[in-house]
Image: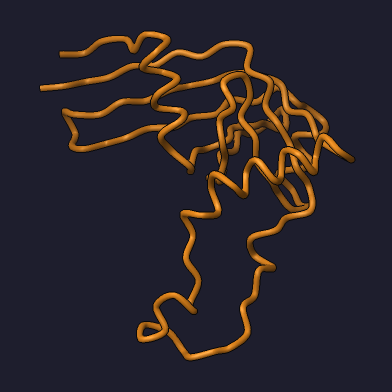
Length: 149
């Protein structure tokens, strides 16, 4: 059976995941990039580094965002959000980073947790966890679909 997710199911899916895909375009070509995020009920909040993605989004801040859960080819849920990208700075950026880290980074484990699976090191490198640009996608529209057999 194919169907549409209701508002409650859409919010639950957005809240239950931590990795989604942001879609953006340069006017000639579309792009999609996986990102770590948190949903606060109104916005998608994330962090990024300087680069092509950020350059293109600054020029065209209208973006889409997709999250899905796929159990099998005939048992899945997907949510698509459209909205506007805003960079967060100062206290707003700091608050967003704290919110993101409290909810998402607790899911990440470093090599110190499973030393038997990694090279043993006493030094923890958080450089890949902290990215300089905080952002939010202010949601304008969201919809969801599912298939369940």
